[in-house]
Length: 141
Image (cartoon, rainbow, N blue to C red; front, side):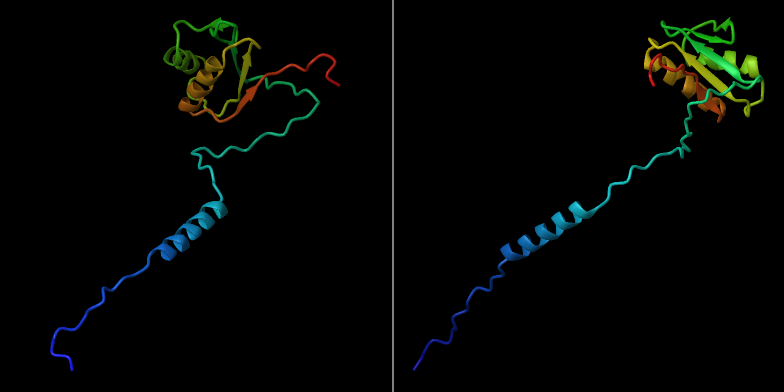
């Protein structure tokens, strides 16, 4: 007969190793099956290109960028440097007509930053019709 009143209590234990395995498997499953979508602020409709050259519009604003990254609107050089000077020159040349199409004519050796600065200035002013002038390669066919 047992005289002791105290009962032996076994420690209650939860084995969490299998739970961790299941959670890691689920995590890997969700990471592998997730589609990564790039969110952009600006929705862009990409233009279709053709072999036939198109004639520029007569009222298109032409911005020329030379090798050194200097800007000219038509044949008039932009005074000053940077985006503010370019924006001011564009406003003087165009006025309030933001629906006018713009053609960027950049030299092949122009730094990309000069072209991006011009595009950024046009975007900040509200221009939406932008074309990049190119020439066809000789013997490309």
